[in-house]
Image (cartoon, rainbow, N blue to C red):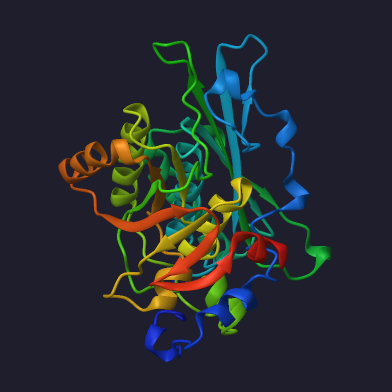
Length: 348
C-alpha cells in the first residue's frame, strides 16, 4: 500500500497571518499541551543533587543509580498524527523527538522500544501502518545507533473500546557517564542568567503543519507532517553532543510543542527570566514563533563562550540562527514588549 496523500494539498498561505501576536499567545496559553508548568509531572524531588550532576537537573527524565557512577535518562513520547497516511515518516519523527530531548539532557541514547495502540493487525490498512512504523523505527535506530527491543513493535487492540486513532509510543533509554573530572555533564533546559545569548540550531522554515498553533488557534487539524529530514536530524544531534562535551552551551532544549515561543517560555519560567529575540525576516512571524518543524534545538551560551560557539558552528556547517539574549524577566519580540514572565506564567 502507498501512503495516502489526503493532506498534501495544504498550503500555509491558506491560513491568514494574525495581526496581533499577543492575542495568539494568550489564546494558546489555555491549551494544556503548551503550559510552561505541567503540574501532573512535577517529580523534581527525585532527580540528582546539583552538586553531583553539575546542574539543577530539574528534569525528571534523569536519575542517578545507587552506586553513583552513572546517570540514566529515560523519555517517552507518543504520536497519532499521520500514522494512517505516512507511518514510516511518523515513526522516524517520533524517535527523533525522543532523541533530541535526551541529547539535550547531555545523555547518550542507547535503546528504544515501541508500542502501537489501537491497531487491528487483521485489517489490511492497519497492517500498512504496522509495516511502515516498523521500517521507520528501524531507520531511526540506524541513524542514531540505537538498539531496538527484540520484538521491535508491540501491538495493543481492544475492539470493544470503539474507534480510536492509531497511536505509537516510544520509550528511549540513555545513560550519562562521569567525565575526566569525575562530574556528570547534565544539561538543564532552563536559562541561567540575564545577558546569556540564545541561539537556534537547525533550519528555519515557513512551516506550521500539525502544530498546536494550527490546530488549536486556527481549528485546522488536517495538514501534513512538519518538515523533516532524518539525515539532517542526525547531524543536529551530533553537533549538540559535541557542544555539550566542549562546554560551549549552558542550556539546551529541543523546539517542541508550541514552537520557538513556548519552548523559550518553558526555558525561562523556573528562574524567573525572560527573553529578547528577533524573528527571521524570510518567514512569517507566526510560523517562526509557533511552527513545530523538526530538527531544531535552542541553546543558551554565556558571553565568554560566544566566539568559540560561533566558530564551532561555522565549522560544523549546520545552520544556526542568533535569536537574542536572556533578560531579567521581560518578554520582547522584534523590539515589542509582551510583558514579564510572571505575567505569562501567572495567567495559566
